Image 1 (spheres, rainbow, N blue to C red):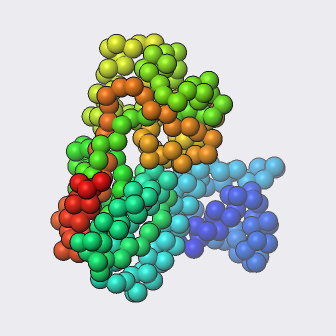
Image 2: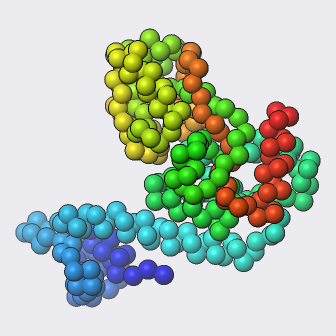
Image 3: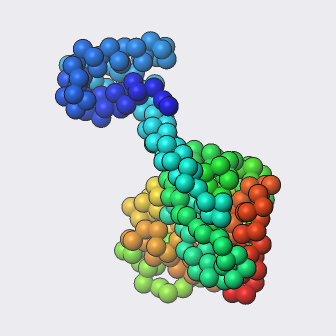
Length: 298
C-alpha cells in the first residue's frame, strides 16, 4: 500500500547507519544503500548527509521522516479497518476515540440510547489525534468511523466538511501542572490568571475561544496569551513542562495524569456533541436521534 523503501529510510534515520539498519532489517548493507539511493532518485531529493560521525538527515529528510511515519501508521490502520469492515454488522455504530475526543460521555448515555435503538451495538475505534488524522477522519466520516464526540463550532464544521449534533455546553476550565501554585485551588477567577501564560487555540479556530480571547485582550492584559495550532497530547505535555495554563474542558480531566483541570468563574463555554457526516446514513441518523433524546433526559 506504500513504498517499502520508506520503512528502510525510517530505520536508517533512527539508527544513523546503513550497517546497523541492515542488521535490524536482516538484509545486507548494500541492499539498504540501494533502497535509499532508489528512494532519493525517485523523489529527486537528498535525504542524508554522509559524515564521518554517521548519517544525518537533511532538511528534506527531516520533513519526509515525519510524514513517512504518518503514512506507514495510516496504512497499517487502514488494513485493520478493512479487516474490521469484513465483519461489520449493519447495526454497529463505530465511535472514534482519542484522548481529546473520549467516548465516555456516549458510554454513559448508551443505556438510554438503547431504549430507542435496542438493536444497536457500538465499536470503539481508537485513533491518534493529529492534524492529519483530524482532516482525514472528519472529512470521511462513515467510511471507517461513524461519529466522534468532541467540542466544535460552525467554523470548525465548515473547515472539516462535517456536521455536529450539540448534546451539551461544556464550560471552559483551565488545566495546570499539579506542581503549579494554582493547582492548590479548587476553582479559579480570571484574576488568578494574572501574570500567567495562557495557552489558547489560534484565532479563527473557534469563535467561542475568540470571545474569551477578546475579553482578555480588552480587560485583562495582565494575562499573556500564547497561541498554539492544535489540541494534541503535545500541548498537554507543553502545559505540564512549561508551567503554562491551558484552556480545557471538564471532559479532559484524565487526559494527562500530571495536570489538574480546574473550573473558572466566568461565563464562557463551547458546544460539545457528536461530529458526523453531513448526510448521515439511515443507521447513523437513527443513532443521532436516539442520542439527542437521551441528552435531553440527562
